Length: 241
Image 1 (tube, rainbow, N blue to C red):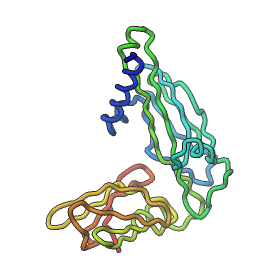
Image 2 (image 1 turned 90 degrees about the horizontal axis):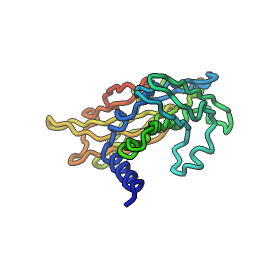
Image 3 (image 1 turned 135 degrees about the vertical axis):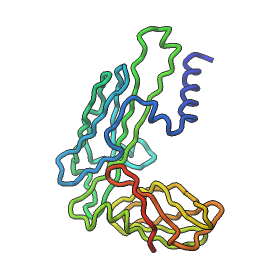
Image 4 (image 1 turned 90 degrees about the vertical axis):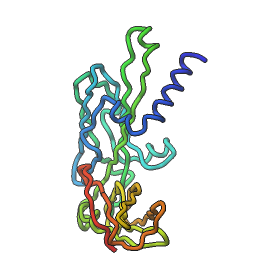
C-alpha cells in the first residue's frame, strides 16, 4: 500500500473515531455558533482566530440544506468575502456576509443556510517531517439565519411557545412561530428517573415527533426541553400543551 493510501485511510479513521472532538483539534476559533442576518443590515461579520503556531488556509462558503453540493451552493443569495484566505499564527480574519436579494427569500418567516469554514493546516517544509505527520482538514459548520423585518413575536418567544401533545408512545412538538427553533434535547421524568433524547431544528410552522427509548409519555407536564438561543446559549423550558 502506498504512503498516500495509508495516509488517507488513517485520516478517515481519525475523523470517524474522533466524533465531536474534531472541534477541539482544529486551531481556528469562530466567535459565534450561529449567525443572525437581520434583513435591515447591509452586512454581518464573523470573526475567525488562528490559535495555532503555524499559518492555516481557510476556505469559506455558504450552502443550503440540499444534499447535492452543486445545488446547495448554487441557489444562495449571499456573497461571502473572502472566500479563501491565509490566516497567520495568532492572527484573525473577518468574514463579511452580504445579502444579494436574489433569489428572493420569504419575508414572512425565517430562512436557514449553513456557513462552512474549512481549515487546512500548513504543510511541513521538511520532507521527512511531512511523511511522518498527518495533516487533517477540519470543517466548522454553523447555521446562518436570515430574519426578515417585522416578524410577529421574538425568537425567544418562539422557543417558549412550542406546543406539545402526546401521540402514541411519544410526543409531537409544533412550532407555530415564524422563527426556526433549535432544540438541543428533550427530557421526560417518570418514576424518579430521567429519560433524554436528542433534539433537532424545527422550521417555522413545522411539527416534529419525539420518542423515548423504553418508556411512553403519559403527562406533558413531566416534559422539559433545552433550546439554543441567538447567542448559542442553552436555555431550558417546561413543555406546554
